[in-house]
Length: 184
Picture 1: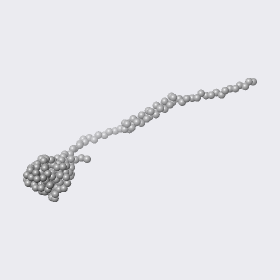
Picture 2: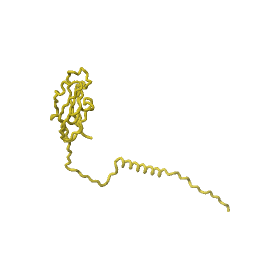
Picture 3: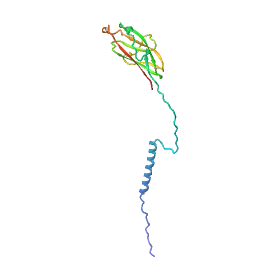
Picture 4: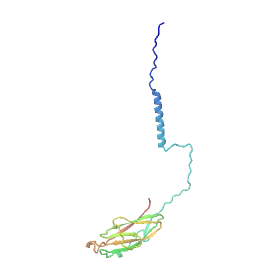
């Protein structure tokens, strides 16, 4: 009997199935997009939710205002500052009141034709010479005035000892603007 030689059968090599890979890639893309969408929307939406309103809510605003010597604008007697000589320091007091119902930080800025004059201000009664920057250069912080607080403010005018001789016999008018601000 003749011997038969049979060749072993080889299985064909199977290539990765593109269909399964495509399905896995699609599923991963959809899952990733869902996660990104949930984060972008601020979370997921619950099936249960509730809402309550607050009836008759009222917001009340505060008021701010200042008066000087009882008026919104006040003239100060310049007699005290007449005939200043180099080195003279003269003070006057004014009353500043916070007419509002909230606290505010009060500042004062002096504007006008000063020549060599310096104007200093401080919260409280006049006493010793006031040091620091002149309110003719930058606003002077007078501190916090609470609601309805009234306080004396000292206005001090100085003719520096180094004033030029050309300042003799001149008139210098100025305006002090008080400003109140509040907030954080």
